[in-house]
Image (cartoon, rainbow, N blue to C red; front, side):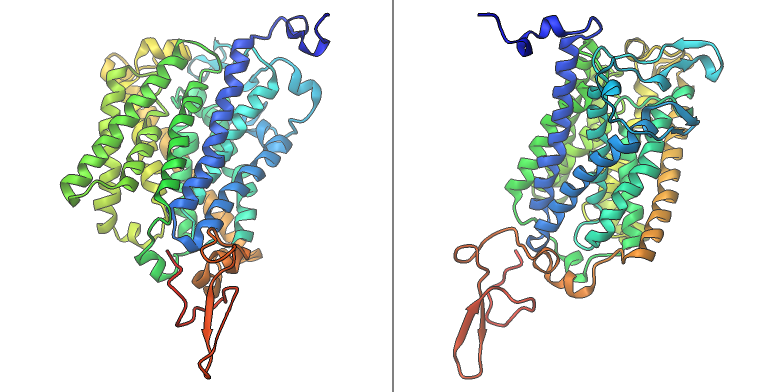
Amino acid sequence: MAAASAYQSSAQAPDWLNKGDNAWQLTAATLVGLQSFPGLVVLYGGVVKKKWAVNSAFMALYAFAAVWICWVTWAYNMSFGDKLIPIWGKARPALNQGFLIGPAALPATAHYHAGGVDLETPAATPLYPMATVVYFQCVFAAITLVLIAGSLLGRMSFLAWMLFVPLWLTFSYTIGAFSVWGGGFLFQWGVIDYCGGYVIHLSAGFAGFTAAYWVGPRAQKDRERFPPNNILFTLTGAGLLWMGWAGFNGGGPYAVNTIASMSVVNTNVCTAMSLIVWTCLDVIFFGKPSVVGAVQGMITGLVCITPAAGVVQGWAALVMGVLAGSIPWYTMMILHKRSRLLKHVDDTLGVIHTHGVAGLLGGLLTGLLADPTLCNLFLPVTNSQGAFHGGVGGAQFGKQLAGALFIIGWNVVVTSIICVAINFIVPLRMPEDKLEVGDDAVHGEEAYALWGDGELYDVTRHGDGTEHGGRGAVAPVTTTPNREN
């Protein structure tokens, strides 16, 4: 019996489709998506105080869903479509059938020599449908918003967060993406960001820190003591992050090629070294190896290698791992305690260190360590090479620094404007009574059913000596067991 036509994929495949590239790009996108949900959803739910587990996980989940709708409605083409201005693409939907199943093309990625009129590198034309590119880039945009949430856990109003996500995606993420990746002025100038050290991590670190300033701090007792409620959940989320990064950096070349393989090896080498260095520093200075510290070292390694993963040699990835595990460790564990600004701004999970500092470090190291041969394999642009390789490499470091300053400056200004505007509509910060209680007051839900069949145990002692048990009250009572952690 002949196979049903739906399974005759070879006969139906257009000539331009490379099934291997398409299969890998869809897989890579799914791996990146899993980093957000369930990866960061679970990590956030486990690394915060018990009373904030549901709210923290829900902020990540909402961001992942909201970005999807914004992305296909207007934001994809603002990031990767036809140029409107040198920092922005033209807004239009990415929902039309003819657009999505046609051959992929990124019209704004044509590179012109020295920003002039002579075409140096043709526009990227991946060998799969446009829908695959839209999917792959959407999960990158989504994880950026999820990372920003890490700075705001434990006090931002959920209604304010619901407004913040589409506004920041529209007026900040799309600018960075188009400028660096989509054919904007930083792309044409030759700034290297292999897979998101600037567009994603540097943006998230400084936007999160800025938003944390405007939202204000957590309740004082939460700032003083904020232990993880479930370290094994934290490790589960961290594991999904690390393994998912194979799709993050492995999908960067838009094809199954040698650079994809090189970037995956470099990613793991840098991450492993960073984790080990961070752990050793914890032991040397604090006397104990910390699991949460190891996760932070893992994250800084992943972030640091991202802008360079496909354009540096293995030995350079090792060096980057050492620096990724030590410099952000210093800024988080030492400098943070000495800096008035860093102590004043309540960045809940230290995203400014794990993503802002690590992303900046990775971008600058790319300007020093990028190998000219690998640069040509990834994106042939004249004079793309790190300063340590001699010749004109010193110029690349200057470009990397200038690109970082643009991303930082834009995010600080635009994030501030967005937060101030939202505060005119709804308060950015939860009221004190909700900050005292947490998830039960905000969502009417709690993460763990500790008593009975999902009922919260609460005992109120009356004046006559009798006791009454029932669902937990908002205000704590004297005979209720400690339920915070």
